[in-house]
Length: 123
Image (cartoon, rainbow, N blue to C red):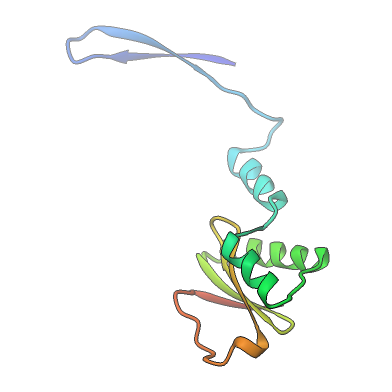
């Protein structure tokens, strides 16, 4: 569908501006965006990859799916940074970027203090 919008300039002159609209069935933009987010996988930051390697932590595909689902849930609740407790591993996840920022195994959680988070999810 092609719409033509007339824009009036400060001197009373008008300019034609063309705008195209594409729609996918009857889905709204918000629905399409939500569907895209639901299918977007969670990434690992370089720091998180290094921590997982150093601490010999393995995250299975099933665990990644649980983390992705928890990320979707946290996003719906308005979270930005979430602490996710997965078995004996604590993960800090940036919800907007869908990125695992860091990982700490149980043996290294001696301080038991996590800062700059706004939610906690137990998986």
